Image (cartoon, rainbow, N blue to C red; front, side, top):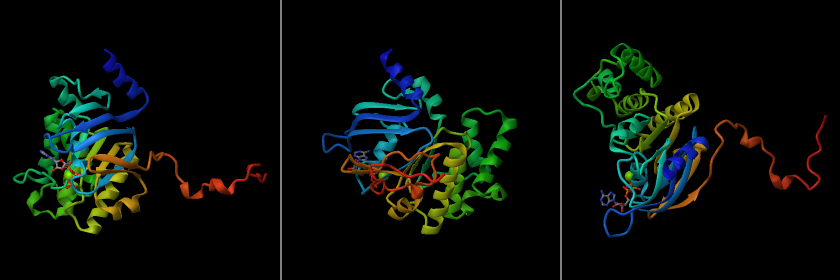
Length: 263
Ligand SMILES: Nc1ncnc2c1ncn2[C@@H]1O[C@H](COP(=O)(O)OP(=O)(O)OP(=O)(O)O)[C@@H](O)[C@H]1O
Ligand SMILES: [Mg+2]
C-alpha cells in the first residue's frame, strides 16, 4: 500500500502532477525523455518549451497516461499511473481536459455536438448537457455559432470549440500540446488568453506545451525547458494568488538594518 500512500501524500500537499526520475525509451536508441523530475501544484500554469524532438509531447502523453514511462514514478491527481488499474482509467481521464494542435474535432458534427460528445462519454444526464455545453461555448465566445458545422469555422474558432470540449466536464487539469501551433499570432494570443482566464477563474491546473517564445515571454508564467529529453531549466512555481511582483523591492537594495517603515 506504500504506493497509494504516496499518491495520497501528494494530494495532501496539493501537488497535481509529480514526476520522479521519469524516462521514456521508444526503442533502444536515444531516450525521448531522461530522468525527468517535476512537480506542478494545484492551480499552477506551466509552459513546457524546447526545440523539436526534445521530448515535450512524450512528457505530456505520459502525464495523460497515453504512454507509460520506461522507468520512474508518475502521480497525477492522486492516481499513481504506474499502478492504476485498467478499470480506473476512465475515472482518471474524467479529470483531464486535453487540447491538441490539430483540434481533432468531429468534422461531420456541428459545434454543439462536438462539445456535447464529451459530456455523453461521461454519462452526464441529458437534461444537464444542454446547459453545460452552452456555458462552455459561451466561455469561449461561440455560443451564437452552436449550430455551425465545424468545417465552416476558422482555425481559431475550431480551437475554441476544442477548448470548450476540453473544459465542459470541468477538468482539474488542462493539458495542451501546441494549442496555437496552427494559428496566426493574434488568434494564438486570444486562445492563450482564454486558457489563462480558465486557470484564473476556475483554478484549473494548466500545462501548455509550446515553442512559441513570443507567447511564453509575454505571459510571465512558469517555464520548464527541455532539450534532448532532459529538463534543462525550470523557472519555478509562480504563486497564482500573488500579484505585484513588479513592486517587490530588490533584495540588494535592502541594507542589513532592514527597511525603515514610515508610520
Ligand atoms: N512513437 C514514437 N516512436 C519512436 N520514437 C518516437 C515516437 N514519438 C516520438 N519519438 C521520438 O522521441 C523524441 C521526442 O519526441 P517528442 O514528440 O516528444 O518531441 P517534441 O518535443 O514534442 O517535438 P515537437 O516540438 O517536434 O513536437 C524524438 O526523437 C522523436 O523522434
Ligand atoms: Mg510535440
